[in-house]
Amino acid sequence: MININNVLKSMKTKVDYIKLEELLDYIQPTKYIVENTDYDDSYSVPVLTAGQTLLLGYTNDSKNIFEASKLEPVIIFDDFTTSHHWIDYPFKVKSSAMKMLINKTNNNFKYIYYCMKNINYVAKEHSRQWIQTFSKFEIPLPSIEVQNEIVEVLDKFDELLRLKQEELIERKKQYEYTKNKLLFNDSYSRVKVKDVCKITKGKSPIQKTIPGDYPMVVTTSERKTSIDYQFDTSAVCIPLVSSRGHGIASLNHVYYQEGKFALGNILCAVEVVDNDKLSAKYLYYFLENTKDFVLVPLMKGGANVSLHMNDIYDVELSLPNITEQDKIIEKLDTLLKYQEKLQLEIDQRIIQFNYYRNKLLSFEEAIVNE
Image (cartoon, rainbow, N blue to C red):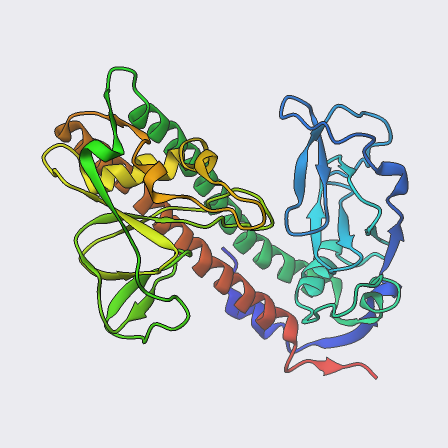
């Protein structure tokens, strides 16, 4: 890999500051908007948004494809949020609320893109941003040799990050395949929750509970704390209100908690009554991965959609023997821990990438051409 210190030494150079509108042209997206949104993974043409999502799906609409390529890349720019992406493959778009930016000079286009990513600006108004605001920003423009060196360094970081992100995607696919294979087996016996568990409603007001030494399970993955505890056990904690509201039945997650803990008063705890027959951790994996078709259909109500505890008692569980449950738990725990490790590495690489991008593009010791 290139020696970054050597590149940083080259920052002691002459630079101009040039407005983006002098470096880039834009193309309106209207011609390239997809005609229908019946996406399917079997189709070949990606449909993109300039927002954070990027890929919306694939279409078979083969008319008026924007023919980006490695030799002729493009930057797609969200005209309202200023989110933007480097694209080097053919695509169509979903919305007219973007610009396709192309290079109109002999400067390194990827260098310009990295400079755009380094602009600290948040759109505060819902208005078109490129022409009126973003294109007016100035970026440092050193010699083409220095531009090329910087791009080479940042591309290395970007590639390492991309590889880790792709690995995480594959690990998530592996987890989905494994948990479906392990949790849903026709040979397992079936049992209802009421035969193996008891259910208790939480007592702690989520907003008014005094913080303390004990974790308090609420309706998000992050725990609050409580001065007191309600349970001293292992349990699956299920929200009793819809995650989305607005009359829509939905549960983002159920939660697993061990030891002494408090529980928010809009959740209930499902405790196992016979640990030789059912593991609480296995129960968590089963309910977390079946909630959308086991728990969510039980939710009722108009504006305030809720889940009644008594209905949970009639939920049917797939129940292998306790030895098999322990094996399932071990396998799924291992896969999830590896995902967490990968995500941590990705987060660290993003911090590293942003640090060096800022360092390389700051030109703090550069000589500014007047």
